[in-house]
Image (tube, rainbow, N blue to C red; front, side, top):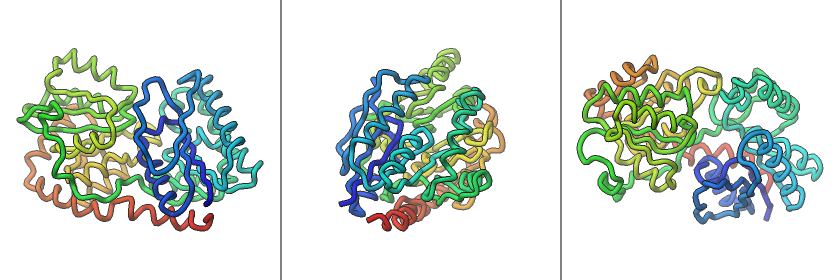
Length: 371
């Protein structure tokens, strides 16, 4: 059985894309090990059909973290046997590239975003330049490359002359769970509408600030924020200042099954990223597909990939700007629209196409040659 090592820099718990890739490879007949890290606040990892390895590091952020992670990943790959390497995002590519050359084994690269254009690097030009140089050195040598949507694929093609294959991050197809937890079991109000924002990257300039502010302009609406990100502490302060504690609920990170329960009881799912940088502009958050699979209408910002899904499949509303007033008006319009029930029906219908079973066909075509 061919051994494949899949590398990520996260703690494995919430990365559903990589989890689905590992499941696909396991079903195909690969012996899969997923390698990441374990943080002090990491949730327990549920049992999986493939092996996992979470490395504990002395540092959890900053230059020392990245330095030690690269070294630990390199040593792990060096002293364990593989027939195939899979690197996820630029922060795992360097060790994988070296080991691929030394051991003369194939390397597959999966870029989940335009790493060099994330806000954390755009605001720090010196660090951004280091990652850009690393990418410019490694990317043109890659043979097997995936990414998450056509806009990002086009960006890479223009920059490096290599067009990655596109595998969008979509859930596996499943009918909505009718036995999901109730509002009461989730400690949510039994009356009024539920607006949901979910994600593992609820960060600054992704619309969460405006969404919280919009709650002051709405009635009979509860906002539920499920997940984590660097803007969460600021949002909590904002909620306190505006005295919205009874109408804005923060759950923090939750296991995937509980996340599905929150999604299932929502009346409207929001994705409000703003085009403040290339990475956000071309994003296609997987939460939009979680909403669609649950039959939940979507309120989205005007980003090319996201807006195309909402409009083409007629599953909600796209707003032209992300301000508290525009968000509040969009929420009101969505709940008042005569198309609301149609959007729910369209979402459930679209789920049979917008699913991992469709996307993984591209993966199988590439990985089958390594069996």
